[in-house]
Image (tube, helix red, strand yellow):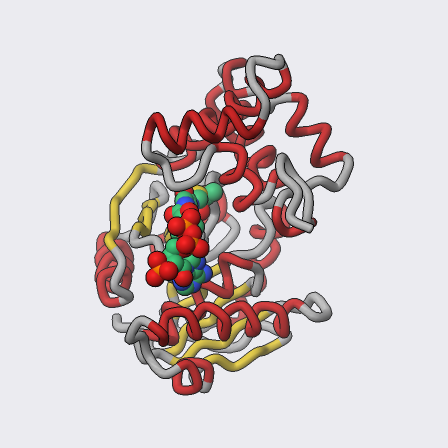
Length: 277
Ligand code: CAA
């Protein structure tokens, strides 16, 4: 399977980045988002990213953009990569619909950061062809793709997705289907603990991030990283870890919840731990 026609669902920062790297590999991409304005914003961010890459010898932006067709509903494809909101019910509804509309040979992949691939597969009639394909933000820059096999994912599906990741210029790493997989099992408690340190007044936000940047050589501190990911997504991932692993150490920090309740979602809302206005 080489997946020449790919449907990417969700034109937010992850979906747009995924559409960009798939189109850059020469494949035809349909980018789906029913929200008014989302496709336009997604295409603008792809054009901006391609512009930066072109300055450094990347592909001609017009040629890549010409391979991305915006669509408002599901369309036939050999591969669906889902990158919609991190909510189980929304993803299950999309997978049910895709299972009915896409050819039975199509693979349904999810970019979920933490939700069970096995459960998503269970709402379809093709659990062998359902898999996790977890990209990292910013997708055009970061090399990793975490490949997550559900309990029933076939060897052939896993092999074809690993090959696709390599063909996109990414480095695949396989993880088993446990809450948060490997990446967010490690990253999100780090982010959550930084929020606790802020809430408890151990240090201010600048100092917390400075310690991670200069002390651990992280490109971004945990609070700025949370702002990049989206604080609502961080809370959603901690809830999956908390519920799925049953350990109180994974409880989302109350300060994170409070910021989300106030609409302080990070970069996308202009305000999170830091101000982006
Ligand atoms: N497209 C193309 N190029 C981009 C880009 C994009 N979207 N974003 C940044 N770049 C380029 C810049 O143009 C710049 O290029 P030059 O060095 O040639 O000038 C380079 O990347 C570095 O960017 P900046 O100078 O603007 O800033 P930076 O050095 O801080 O790098 C960063 C930005 C790449 C985001 C870096 O801070 C970084 O890697 N941060 C960590 C991000 C991270 O941990 N992401 C994982 C989040 S977890 C996740 O996504 C999954 C999940 O499940 C939650």
